[in-house]
Length: 148
Ligand SMILES: [Zn+2]
Ligand SMILES: [Zn+2]
Image (cartoon, rainbow, N blue to C red; front, side):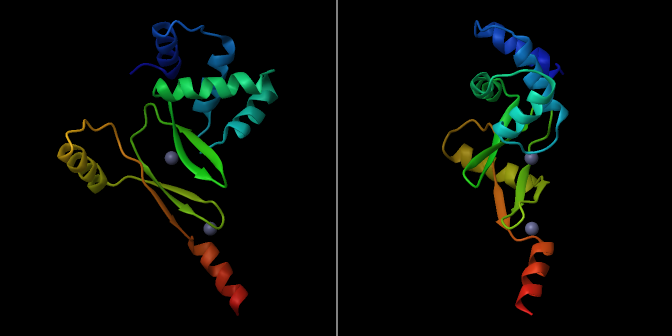
């Protein structure tokens, strides 16, 4: 498997773009973290080690999605969260709407469901996305404590 930097280089070459140290730093930062981040959070952590323009970061995100390196995960209070997906097995997310905790899970039945639905409509399957929303045990306890 190619490294994420090779994937970026390859994508940039095929699209006649410029490979810049800034784009390389963005990809390195994204692959060094294992969370679901907003572009603003990424900007703040990148800025600690190098000068970076917010505008060029925002311009780079769609390239990384198209290159298959990252994906949009979900919307949280109006903000889009992303994660690096290249080299990772597809997974879904269970999210607590009170505290924001996120649990990743993988379910084979969803894969089969995706295959079936795509097949029925003559689609070639690329993947699926599922977000399960709820209230985690800790937040349920807190809510119960408030009621007492
Ligand atoms: Zn919670
Ligand atoms: Zn995830």
